[in-house]
Structures are given as C-alpha cells and as structure tokens.
Length: 164
Image (cartoon, rainbow, N blue to C red; front, side, top):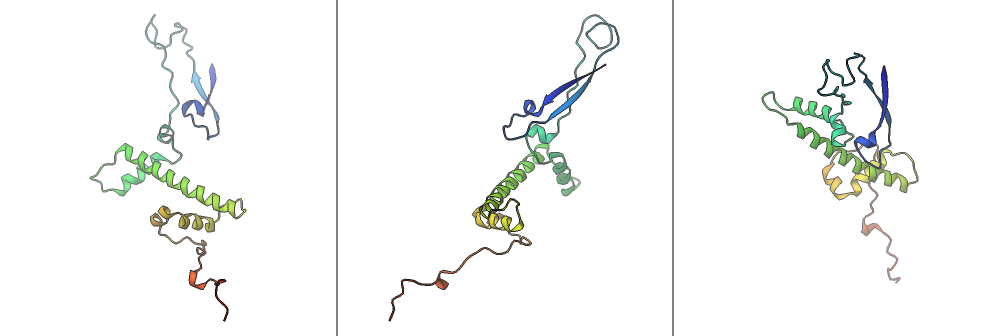
C-alpha cells in the first residue's frame, strides 16, 4: 500500500510572498505482519523511521539561487590545493540574489514609469545608472541600453536674460 501525504512549501519555509505549491511525498507502509511498529520484528523498539523529503541547500537557506551549483563553480575556480567552505556558497548565493532583486526592482520601476510591462535593456541601464551604488559597482556597457539623458546647464535656454 502507498499513502500520499500532501505538504505545502509554506510549512517548510514561511514566506508570505512566495506562491504555495503542493507536492506529494510517497511513504511506503510496512506489510510484514510483525506488529505495527515496523522495523525488523520483535516486540518493542523504535518505529519505522519516516524518511524525510530531501531538501536542497537553496531551500534550507531560503534562497532562490542555486547554492549547489555556485559551490561547484567556486570549487572549480580555486586551485586544487585549496578548499571551499560550505557556507561560502550560501553567502555568495545570497549576495547574488540580493543584487539581482535590487536591479530588477529598480528596472521594473523604470519600466512602469515609461508605461511598459516588459523590462528592456534600456530600463536596466536607467536603473543601474540612476542608483549611485550600483553605478559604482557595475561598470559594464549594457548592449541596447542607450545613454542617460543629461543636458549641461550652460546649454539650457536662459529665460531670465535681459533684453537690450
């Protein structure tokens, strides 16, 4: 026999912003007939240990970015004599996720200001160059980003000029 248990991701990681997905964990029941405790026979002892569903390191850390993949890339980046700690990948993934969320939020605001629903490279350019800290961090040229609108003050029309 198999029993199906449904478990919500919100029970594992309570975050109000994420959508709750339902998945099913299959648990095998003991059919041996040697009592309801499970295990190998005998009267008492511990019951059958229910195997927990495996959790990824990203879900344990509450992140969306792949901790395992980043750990693999970090290990391949250092020389063979050096080691990479387990928390280094979690920390790096958290930093990358934060920066990505920050850039996407600013780019989404720029797209909304221009009454567009889709983020284009122009919106990324406006978001990064509009924020002082991101501008110093990201020095790359964004393809299709255009230029930042700026008119020097000496080129502007002077309406207060006296007429001769």
